[in-house]
Image (cartoon, rainbow, N blue to C red; front, top):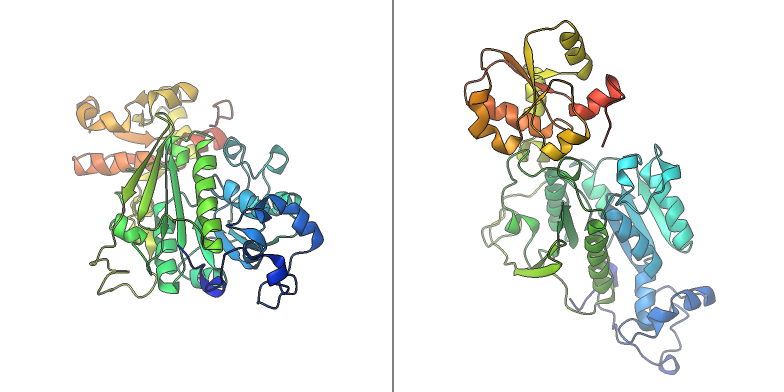
Length: 410
């Protein structure tokens, strides 16, 4: 990419001797000047011909919105602030949890239980007090996405769920914003830049979301703690390059990183002329219900149909010795960390071949870590003819919090 987005476009990124550009520190070219302390702070940038004073002032003039202050948002926020990006917005509504700390390096132990945005603001102020940090403590939705995203030059997607990824992508295309994308799972990460004005969008790569529960979240499937640091840093590099207008961007390319093999692979991406969002004849002209699009209404449907049970309800029924079978659909490694006494372990991926071990005449309560995989197991068994099924709302995590604190949380 050669031209930065939005108001930053059209400026010559080439470093020019100060004697030939006396207006560099006056702001006469529309870019904010750098103070003497900033000149010292960014001195290692300034001696790079690809950055120079003009480039550093571009960074100061730029604005980036981070969607999420978690694993990917942490390195993004830290390095964009350190680089001198003048305005950083962060959308998040979560609090810091102890399970976040092995990968979300933006937050520390003293912030457990407090809003991530407060932690992020405090940490970024330590990194670079010259940067303006906008905090948006809300869930990104179809109703607020345009208002939140419109004021920023670049959108960086650090989310961990498919509805929000499609929402970010669609809003970026409709607003004409570049989307710096990253995703992580276990030992593998992906990164790209989706800019529909010059290449494919996320829908060109993934026209349809996977079935609910097929791809577990980090909470369900785990993630190597250092992995988001690598992928998030790639996102930060792409964002900075975009603002400076230097180098070759990841538009039209998907970088896949395998930490176990320590290998990077690159896949070429092409714009889909039939894409309903950015293709030749687009049919998507407004934001939609992304929960429904991704098929995530099934959990609510199960609750409405009476196929859900709370941890306290299950505890009461087990105490009464009701005739029911508790089935744990997690992996053996998870079962060894924490389990409900008497639960039968039948991992989700082995359920089809082990289904005959379950008695369809008895009531079966399915559980996993947080309730996602067990909901998928319930739907599979229901299609296979089982009728007496319940899903444990919140999984074994809810059991630990609400019933038996001696069962470890993870």
